[in-house]
Image (tube, rainbow, N blue to C red):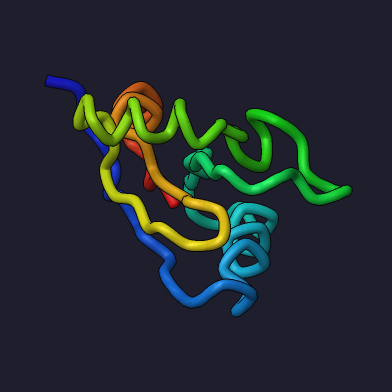
Amino acid sequence: MTDQGPLIIVSGPSGVGKTTVVEELLKRGSVPLRRAITATTRAPRATETEETSYHFWSREAFQKAIDADQLLEWEPSSGWTTTAHPAVKSTRTAPRAEV
């Protein structure tokens, strides 16, 4: 079995600064961390890129993932967001924390 670091979840309402907190932790580099890329159905913002900021999915693709039980969690809102099982599982092979 591969040694895995913990899965750290940063949670809060939209716009509270979750991404800012995670980016600062990654920038400091004092703890071995890796950012989990989540999926959303909202349109990308000007500063966001596919597979770096989020996976930008259609509502149909998102619903298929829900129906196939492929999501770790999801929340319906103006743009659904999620952490997909395969995305987390595929990056959790190293002894580092995932945020």
